[in-house]
Length: 179
Image (tube, rainbow, N blue to C red; front, side, top):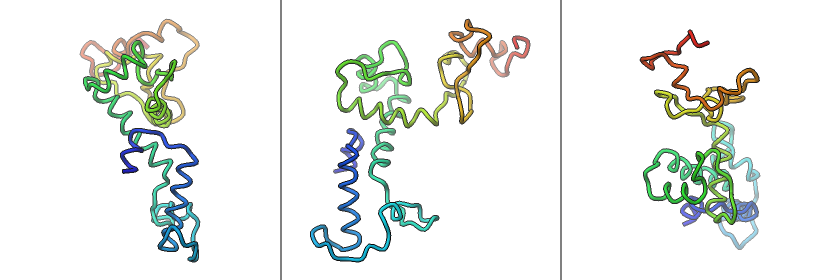
């Protein structure tokens, strides 16, 4: 039941800590009411990966963001779904999902999706393909960990041009003559 709620809503930090407290208490004592039992490891130690000496438990907050991130991924990869169309019309009608903001009077679900989107943005960049749907200066398409956006001071006019204009006529390689 909690996984379903975490797929839809962003749980508060306090609630996540309370759930982790109950899980930790149950793990060491076998009961949530009795306080007896020796705590051999902290909760952070239990949540560490098994390769690093932990038990591989999940941090509730991170799990919540991961499940919400899955919903964000569905919004990105299934543009024809009804949910995507509804959110696009309501929250980002004239921009992409990565440029979306909370807007006025956002729903609780949308706020959670925006939080997961912020976490997703750090590792996402677009696949170019034929370059007809990627804008050079606005879309993250460079495979760089530091900055996946094109930044230039020389040509402001290039910011709104499609990446396809940088490819050769066949669209298979970069057009080196335009560089």
